[in-house]
Image (tube, rainbow, N blue to C red):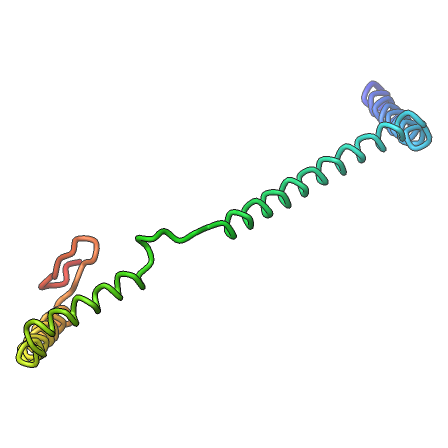
Length: 142
């Protein structure tokens, strides 16, 4: 008997609570104070998003102005350095000749360097190379 009464009471309690929840929801829909508060919250959120968007826009404009005002430093420009280098080369060429002998020696040195690089590359391909250790490994260990 007690179990049946307990089940009946629990069922009635759940129905009552559900009825109260429905009543509260119905009243909230129609209560002018709740509607005014909801409207106020929505306006505040809209104002926050508008301010955030305006702030982002101002930051973009500020960055654009800084980018327009940016002036490349004189030491960064390579055109002046290249011009000075060409002038120096022309001056040395006038003083010491055309340097055709030096060019032959440079070509020989370049071919030697290429051969040396090719042999090193072949060694890397034959063995295993560890880029973390920067070592060439002879055998594969597991």
